[in-house]
Image 1 (cartoon, rainbow, N blue to C red):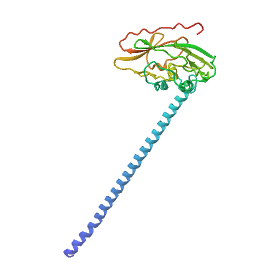
Image 2 (image 1 turned 180 degrees about the vertical axis):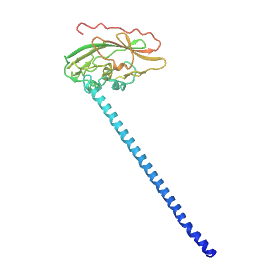
Image 3 (image 1 turned 120 degrees about the vertical axis):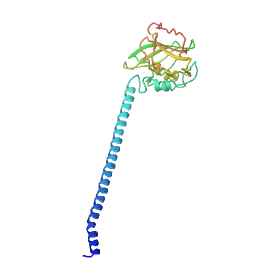
Length: 252
């Protein structure tokens, strides 16, 4: 065998080894591609599961919120917000004295209160409200919740400026709050102030029930028979002397 023939033989023997190496390289690439494809599919599946979970949580939250609205509408006297809180917070933000709103019937309905041609008799009781600003009494006007022109009135109203709050309702299952009074009055009342009087570093609004300090939003104070409510706005370091009771007239 010549030298050239021997070289050719060696060269030909090396070819299978090269083909085998190329096959392994292609096979490795194919395995990596499959692995990469599987990873992409798994990542897509995880994103889909997160979206489904997020949507389910959102549905639950909306359902709970809707339920809360329904429950709120079923409490109190009428179909609106029985606490009167959010509506009272959105009332006028001017300085006292505060006059009656232009449309007392619409204001009463905004408080979730029924308006009719005559007073109800199923529930009949009275609370009393005092308001003091910097030591000066502020009148609670007559005819809150009363429409003198039509003679209609809401189940929660006033007749004079004594601060006596009349609850005279056609059903006995209602719950009435101070927030509803202020919604009817269309004067802002919340934990941060009353009307245009805001809590500050020097002044604040304090609420008292039967002479005892009430913590929280005063709009949520519930009206009950012969309950005495006092709202005091003034210097934080002032010594308040709220009334513990009120001398209601006979029959009130």
